[in-house]
Figure 1 (spheres, rainbow, N blue to C red):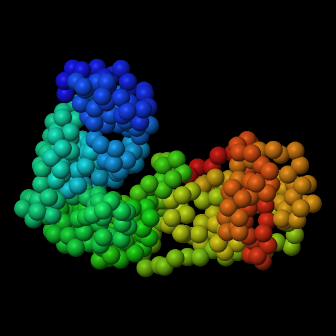
Figure 2 (cartoon, rainbow, N blue to C red; figure 1 turned 45 degrees about the horizontal axis):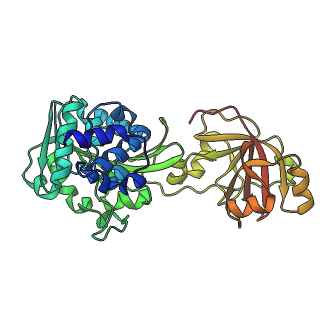
Figure 3 (tube, rainbow, N blue to C red; figure 1 turned 30 degrees about the horizontal axis):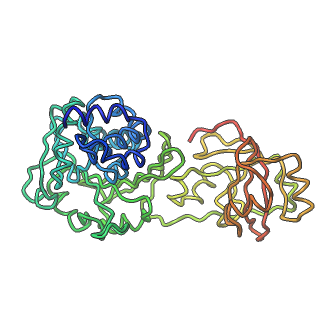
Length: 402
């Protein structure tokens, strides 16, 4: 990188990259594609990887690699799991990419090998690892499957298979990813004590476990900021006897033993009248619990009751300690009757609106109710067990753990 390119990057660190791209002809001495990647990368890193953004000299990859890499919270969680299951020995990351997951996991291991088939990403990783103080890191430019065949033993193999096909389309099935981790699982388990696989959060975790041949010991459904980010499978010698599922949301962990049990549906409750809902608590599970689908387990563990079979909203007569999600107090409950709606929403011009098993979208419901966004009121539109469409007008309860 020449001085003119470096100066351009520093001078335009906060500028609109799309606008800068139109100015290439005015800066012939600037490596414009590289400069734009660095400016865009730094801007994204401030939100996604703040500890990296604070390090001078970090080189950022093209946009797709930045988009696909883990955020700091998710990477830190994986590092904690890696340290627990296999820390202290050798780490091999077969799909290095930008190197975020590798960099967070590597400090827990005596030696760490980053494997990536793209020379450009290997060069970036090599430069960045030095700046991050990862003296034990070895960078290998190779195909993951080929390297796996010739590598020596390891404490942990980590793999994050590409979820895009040859033309850039998204793929979600385990067998459609590259490398095919289901096909390689036998070799990986022969080479390492433990294997951690990162998969798309779009996958059904039960099918993913089945696709891996029943050798999964832990499932981690990881959410950050209310959004489900990734699905982690941990395999190892002796796994397959039990299966623990961890629903992780911003550091909290709702765990359960899923060994030998199928999905546990909820049992909807009935109400003699909507007045019976007023003053009750309504709970919305967090994104990881929603993905896990363990709704019947929530009822048994916390004593809550489902509003409807597919509403995924739960009520109780009072606060529930430790519920993995958000809690609200029901101030008013109404059907979609126009007169009752006017009464229930009297004086409310703005609200946070959510729909659960309801025939209207959030946008459609906002238009019908003439509600702006935001404010301190929360409106849940859902369907009760008797198929009645209702609106719950709520206030936020004291935060619950989870």
